[in-house]
Image 1 (cartoon, rainbow, N blue to C red):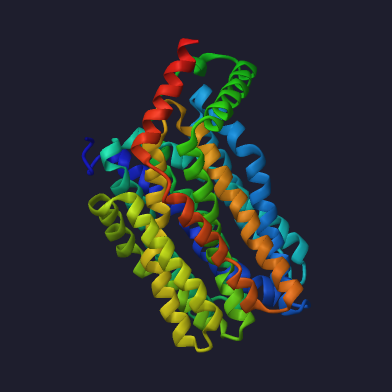
Image 2 (image 1 turned 135 degrees about the vertical axis):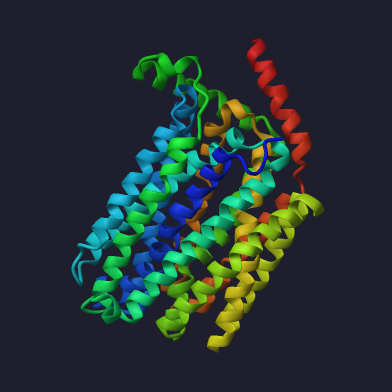
Length: 431
């Protein structure tokens, strides 16, 4: 087993520290607030909720359309790191662009947010696919958990600074809170770019024979690998069951991440209270994710995942009934205890079932389902909100994803599925 002190391993995990600044300050924190109060200030609460829901759905749809093919091409040409940084710097540039959008220009803000989210989600496909390159299978839970834990800590530290900037702009020589939010977006871009460098410098990607081929040949091989992978997955019951389960329960997780602040505003909580709740999630999430990864190692990854899904179901039910800010803080703690754990253990559980040589294309499908789920969740929430004119009913609808996801996950056997995948690959290579 590779030592945990391995420099490539920590360099890989540090990318989560880098790009979580976008997930925290932009996606979960300031953009939903700023969108309602600045970019889309003239719209009512329900309309702006729908606008944000549709923007999140569009970003996820676009990444869904390219994820599997890009994963196959990356595997064929040894291009995981190149694609990772292509998407990362798209996200970085779009985040800087948000700082240039004027009040009331919600269309421009939404467009930049969609492009930035594509950069964020696209880079994560290839980041996930590099996990088997930096750790042995026996360490997947721990290493995956380390990445998410560092993401909580890094994202939380920058977010705390950004909150201070917004609440006391005069202390930083900033004219007002709006200018401070825009400067926060710039700080996210700089943070993301700076802390991505260790992965660029110290994580090596094994190059295969196709890496020396022409671009056209690599694309052709990528299409061929994608077609083969589709046929393989279609014939692997265990893998299909897990991907379907993941598709459902991660839908609920992503919807809560993206829409929690918007929901809090809709039911009447102050933005300062919501920001404090997000900080609670970040700093409780750091140790909680490390501990949850240990729980997965000792108790079993699948059982730990089912426990996290059960907690999320309670979270949704609790959210529909809460009326006081202190309840929102309690909700934040509950989310922090399992959010990083369910993400980290899902990644490591899946990594156990797939071959290292096909990691990017298999993770392309993994992320495809995760992002396709991220279309359905916000879209469902937006449609239910418009139809019922009730934010509480719309958030309650998310419970369906957790219930169905848990039922499917109980049918998955990772060890048996990994054996099926190996035999399928062996048979196809012998043809």
